[in-house]
Length: 222
Length: 222
Image 1 (cartoon, helix red, strand yellow):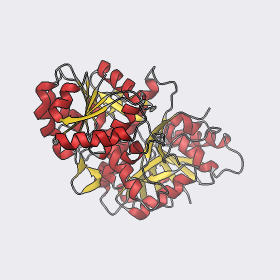
Image 2 (cartoon, rainbow over the protein chains, first blue to last red):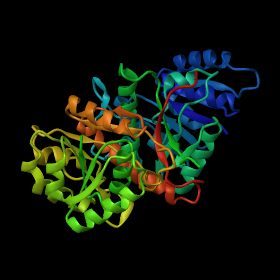
Image 3 (cartoon, helix red, strand yellow):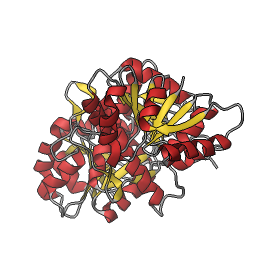
């Protein structure tokens, strides 16, 4: 089951490609620059053992076409809407996994939410309800994803209006040995996306004794 | 250093009174019904060892007067603005700690944010910038707080526009053996308050194998 990662040459996209390919999921990296996508794919493949699934690079539209069902949107927020508009008609029968955080321009410690309420809701509005949008993976540190010998130090908060699509995305995330929680409808993305600038703030803070902070759901002590 | 807890007869307020008094911080519980506040204070005191600080009960205005500096607002959201308006002129030289989550009426799995963006921002607007408002303790399960033999299974995300006030509140929270993080300005409350209905959703979910979920900031694996 091939998945597409659009913006797959960026730090988040690269880390996800590595993690999923290592777990046996073939990845098509999509970029505006197909040659760069190819070069990135080759570079990432070389970091993985022979047992890993393939990572291929191509342009964005070809990557969407290569995906059996899941298309992960990992472009910078500035390219969020335009990328979606350019692939909308290719997304029939697919699921869009939106990991984009609308960080404020020039200030990664704040969000500037779109009028729709969040990037996930904006994507759902733009694509129409027939194409399920699932928000996920907003709060995972790219550095951690790319550190293949480290476990991923967070849980993943998943949201979206279509339950079966969410279940499939949770299953896909679980393959990376990460726990994912269904956090409700797309509107929960207003909270989930906004957690990222808070983590960035903690990473920058001199008072916090670590960087690459993650967030976890915690059960009560027994 | 006596602190006031307004709405201290509710489950969140009771739990906080117990935890702070046990840690040696005298508490003045404020309620619209002074007799009920007194009865609650007596009941709570009886649950604590003799080494604990005192818990007293009184009406809301007397509780604000009894507070040396910190006034914790723990009323239901429906009473948030009216309570603040009724004590505004008593809050000079005090710090308001706002723990209120604007849950949607009839649906605790969603927030209905006020026009100001969050309850914390609404409080700051209502009181004016001369009285520092610090948002905190939104995501702590009342059940856990009241289970005195359990550790508190979460970190506390703190926000507000006044740094010295935040530092004092973080120190007060640390007394409960809980880690608290400065998560930025009051606008971060749009995210932090909205985490609570997500936790409530997970607590209700049959797919999540525990209730009273908390949220934690997690350092990367070494």
